[in-house]
Amino acid sequence: MFMDKIKDSIFKFFRLDNLVGSFSGYIEARLQLYKMEIRDDVSKALSKALVYAVLGFFAFLFLVFFSVGLAHFINFFMAASFAGYWIVAGIYALAFLLVLIYQKPLYENIEKRFLEMTKRKEK
Image 1: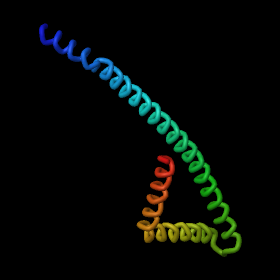
Image 2: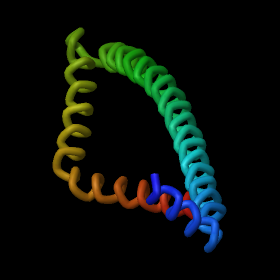
Image 3: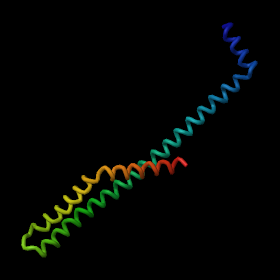
Image 4: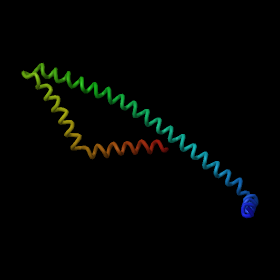
């Protein structure tokens, strides 16, 4: 009880009670600002991810139907009715091998671009 009175009188004497109140208000305002910025960043990231997922889905459908059409078109010129499918599959196997061989430079390039995007956002 006595210590509380001394502490209160010291706070009032040095006007620390106002300083402590202002500092705590400042901290609360900064935390609210960070929460709002994080909420904004998350909503932007989710909306971009959703748009990219939809674009990826339609690109996948296009690729499937284009591949089937290309295989049929190649079959028109070949004697065997399955040769077009093997040729299209070989094209995809070649693309897979190229990505597999050059995966490290691709990974580093993509990582570098993401870092540039985040640095641009900080400015």
